[in-house]
Structure formats: structure tokens, C-alpha cells
Image 1 (tube, rainbow, N blue to C red):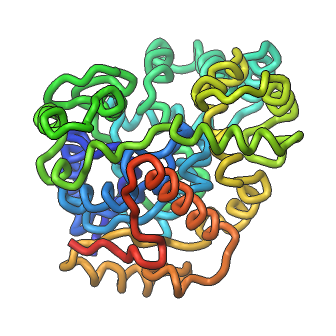
Image 2: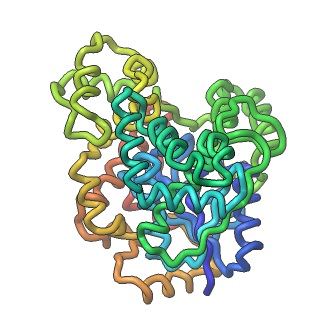
Image 3: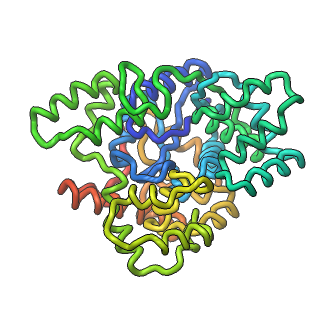
Length: 411
């Protein structure tokens, strides 16, 4: 059975995601679409707007055949680790293709840049260190180093600034780097992104960005039936009806719903450096902040500098809340980012796909949490889900099934 893999957050699932699934299947002629999806928390350093089971059902209803969970220690990491872990897991699942969206839609161009960054020639490393010494953030330093290295030695070097300033292009390059470094057998396929830009904050029909839809949901008051009906009417412009039927707008979570937990952690911590993302300098900056109860996003904004991007800081804060440590990332790397494959959902007619994966890999395939071996990395997933469930309950009085009772979603 030929399979195409997609790396996703579906935060939330929208028309653009449905388009990518359709194009992935069409362009690869795959028999199955395997999605590896972030669970309770996402790469930008915040909770997923809806719980992972809701987003899994939306994905299955809109064309995915199997949804695996991207482990939380990977889902909340830098773009490089996020990509490395997702590529490793989809390779282990036996995917023949990896399909991803990009602004440029030019696979050859993306591959050339990815190869350069993956190999890190001496000239590139020198430029990178120089850029970092000036106080640039790591992403900005990478962009500058790549531009300097390629300038004058590549016929398409004039296209590099636009290429490296587009978020989906950057993530595409990270996927291609991971394929190259891991010698993955997956064949990359890119689909040109359509509709709104990644960072657009006001939705427009029909292809709005996830950021814009989240912004709409967070600014909509869905307490009354009238307003909630209006919310669904608006969302129907940007989300497939199958995905829309899975969600409850009033159950949307945001980063600031975790502010009290951050305040509690700060009360009893005098050194943050064991948690991933915290350098001694960033730890000292957090310790130096006036300790008054404020929103988590306000704390992140106060810590932001030229060197530390807002996303980096937000990820570090959630690593602290989720107890994701540098030692955990080292342990994940030591096992090739594939300590297990966790199944979140599957289409009923595709259960043979699980048997195929089990036959072709020695990596544990977790269908039932109770049967999973005790493992620190898997426990982080369970703890993250419990924390998300707890915060959602205290905000909305909606109680999700716990990880032992939720089970695999079958559509």
C-alpha cells in the first residue's frame, strides 16, 4: 500500500488543509494519507486551540486515513527538531512520499538551499557564527549566513531573501534537511500555498490562514446561542463542513489560559536552565522580571529581545510548564526521534495499514495507552494531555476523556 505523509498541526483544520490532502493524494497517486499531527501543544509555543481528538476527527473526516501523534517534546521544539522528529516518524511508518505546502512551490530551489544548510560548509558556519555574535536570533542568523554563502555562487541567489522570509518555505527547507540528513527514503513533494499568508490575522474566504481563524475565535464571544450561531456561520467560509461539525468554538484554548500555572512555577524556581529553550541568560532575564501575576503572553513579550524571538521564549515557557528538559531532547535524538508511534485515529477501512506498519518496523506502535511500556518520553505526552484536559475543564467545565479512556478515533 503506497502512502504519502503530511506533517500538520491542524490548528484548526481549514480549507487549505483539505486542499493539501487532496493534492497530496492526487499528485502521488497514494493509496493512503498518513498525517503526523501535533497533540495538545504546538510548535509556536502555545496550546492547540482545540484538543487533539477533535482535530483528529476533523482530519479523518476531510481525507486523512491515519493520524499519528507528533510527540510533545518534538511538537513544541524549534523548527529544525520539529521537522527532524516528524520526518523520522513518517519514515518509520513506511511513507513513500512526504507532501508539504510552500509559498514558492519550487522543489528544486528548496532542495538546493536545504542541501547547503544540511551540509553546513565552512563558509556557511563562519558566516553563521559571525551573525550570532552580533546578537541576531538563530533564525535571523541562519538567513543571513545562507544569503552570504550563496551570494555570487548561485544563479538564483537573488530569490533567496524572499525564499527565507516565508514561513512555509522555511519549514519546507527543514523537512528537506531532515530527509537529506536521515537518508530517508521518502520522496518530497511540495504544493504551492494558496490563499492568505501564514501570519495574516484577519480571515478572508475561502482560504484563510490558521492564524487568522484562531484570532477570530479568540476575539469572538461564544457564550450566547445567537453569537455562537454567528460564529459557526463565519467559520463555514473558511473550514470544510466536515471539520466544522467536529468543533465547539467555546472550547478554544489560548496561551494565557496557562498563566496561573506559569506564575506558580516561577514562585518555586530559582534556575530555569534545565528546561529546553532556556540559556543561562534567558533564565536570568526571567528571574529578574518583577514577579507579579500577569498573562503568560505578557511575560513572553517582556523577555523578547533581538536575540530571543517571541516564539523561542513562548516555547521555553511551555517547556517549563510541561517539564520538557534538555536531557529529554538528548534521549529522543539518541533513539532517532522514534521511541514509539502513537495512533490517534484511523479510517475503518484502512486498518490493514496498521498491520502493514507493524510488519515493517520494530518501533512500538501504540494503539492503547495501557499497553505502552513505561517510558519517560511517552509519559511527557500523557502529562501534556492531562495538563491540557485540566485547564480546559477549569475554563469551560468540559471534561475530556483521560488518555486511558479516550481510545483511537475510528471513522
